[in-house]
Length: 147
Image 1 (cartoon, one colour):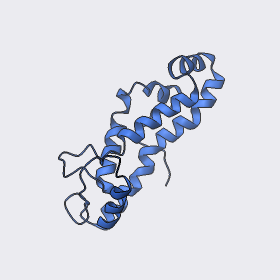
Image 2: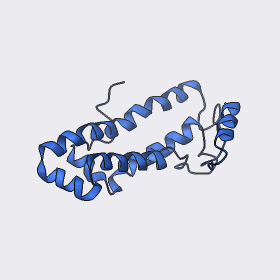
Image 3: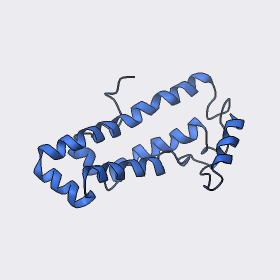
Image 4: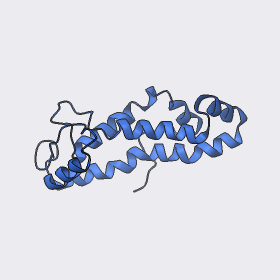
């Protein structure tokens, strides 16, 4: 794992690394393989509402003139709205933040999923949350997602 991290950091020479470089395996954050697998299983549950919103956005805009007007006025297009959501997701959802301490953040699955979970928890406060409401994607816990 450490070798992979070093190779990635080497390829990102011009970009700065975000978060700590700690890889949590066999410690308090990721104590065993079951925990590690469970963390990966959470990805679909967290991202499912985003996928549903994006999939339904075009159809919702086409079926309702006032929604289409709102999207065009606010985001210029459906593509602009999608880009806004995804830009925020990829800038803040995988940045290694969200841990209680700097060592809890990081490049491991736990650090990245902590930031992804934090991003999802803050979704109702995002300026584009209305897009989730307009597409009737308000179940943010992914409870209807099937692995």
